[in-house]
Image 1 (cartoon, rainbow, N blue to C red):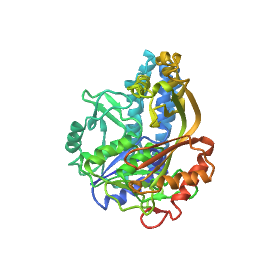
Image 2: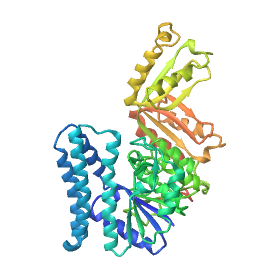
Image 3: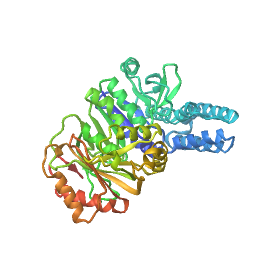
Image 4: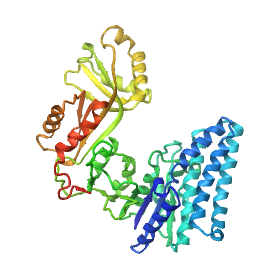
Length: 469
């Protein structure tokens, strides 16, 4: 049993839906599988915009509903004959009508809570899966629409709900395990025990696929997208970036956290628990092997596995002679930022305890300074802590790989290359796992830094089992 998940870009229009159907028809011959789909590209954003307009009493939300309806109707016109398209349009029209009625209610009460928005967003996946189910049956693939709200149980943290794993896995085995048709399951959406619609947050459809795979003890989970796999670095900056053939779970998590957007760390949790490989494939280039993410991999030929980058970073320097030897100062700083719901991306502190350097998203940096100024007012007045120094327009670059552990000279090679390229490093952090060295530089140097580091470590990049074209 496999799980195949296709994202919004893979089913953006009729021609792409046809491409996906060809992949699915070929897969039918290989054995049983489950299909998980996102909404068609752009539909979720239209749903959100419609909901916000309805909340304001702006009847332009009806225009967005019409655009959503037109997108699906256009696909039906291409995929089906006029006669065979009638029952498809009927089923889709029912969902469009339900959406319109619901948003009319939002317009009347002038309120769109997170709970309401989750229900509005659920229409995207329900519509795409309904359309795909009809089309697969038209193509001779016996398919069955399944609403994930009947399978995945969560708490009521609307917008980014937490999964109740035991109940979810029990339902998946019960309702999906014995189905002989190809199950077409809605990604991204779930429900509470009381049947209230929730959503799974960023990359929620990938998470759905991972949950379905874990619940069925699948042999693999395939994430089909619009790239050939996980790349060695950002191809916008490095022309010879290449697809990495294999990654360990830990390497993939590090790369995704530091900007590689192909897969989200949360997606991997169920797969890691059940030791199920995740394969990243390209819908538009299916003959490519892609990237396989699993527990045990062949040793990479290069010292590192990949280079990732987080953009739009600010660095907050907190210094003061009064910080030296004072227990709990760091904990207090972190507590203040946590209370303000601000996420710290990177921490660097010297052994002198004289300073702490924090990396934050640039759009949260000013709020961080405001919160610290307020809560540490006495320490600032007494000069225990100096005025905070905020440096903006930065990026964090992370060099990542299992091979880095216990290998002498990685840091020397990295910073020597940066030094020769005259790239100034503002802060450095390395975890005890030795799997990641992160450093902060000015945004203007990011392209040159990525190219420099990539060239330093991947001079024979595609050798043996590391990369593919």
